[in-house]
Image (cartoon, rainbow, N blue to C red; front, side, top):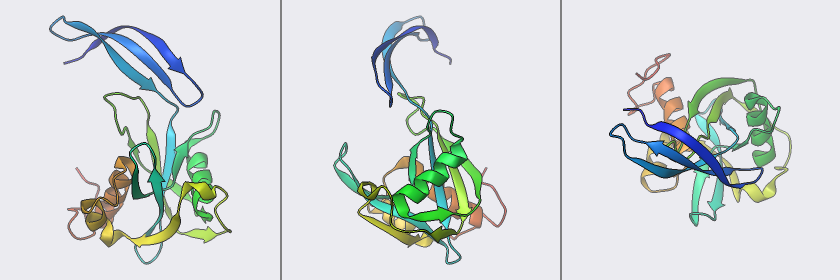
Length: 188
C-alpha cells in the first residue's frame, strides 16, 4: 500500500539535515503531516584482516548516552564518491588506510523517518599510517574477532544498526558458523 505525498515544506535546515513536514495521504484517504529528515548519504567500511577480525572503534554516542563498537562511518561530502568517503573515514577515525574497497551493501537505517542511505564497503586489510586524525571519534580502535559479534550484539556492545547489519553480512558471506551463509554464497 503506497502512501501519496501531496507536498513537503522545510521546518529546519543546516548542512547536516533538513527536517520537513510532509502532507501524506494513506490508501484509505486519511491525510496527516508526517515528519521527514532528509540528509546527505553516509559511507562506511568493514575492514578485516587475515585473522577474521574487523577494525572497529569504541565510542560514546551522546544522543543515546551509550557506548558501543562501530565500523568507521561518516557523511559523504558534496562531490565526493561514496567509496572515497568510506576510505577517508576509516583513515581519519582509526589511523589505518584500507586496502582496495569493494561494495558490500547499502543500508537505510531508519527509513520511516529519514532518507539517509549508508553505502558500506569491504576491505581485506589495511596499513597503519599513524594515529587517528579525528581522535575525538573513538576512545579505542581495535581489531575485534568477527566470531564475537553475536555475543557483543547480545550484550548491547554493538547497537548501531548499520554496523550490525554490515558485520553480520560479512560473517554470513564468509560462511561463519551460526550465520546460515557459505563460501561465496549471498544470503537470500
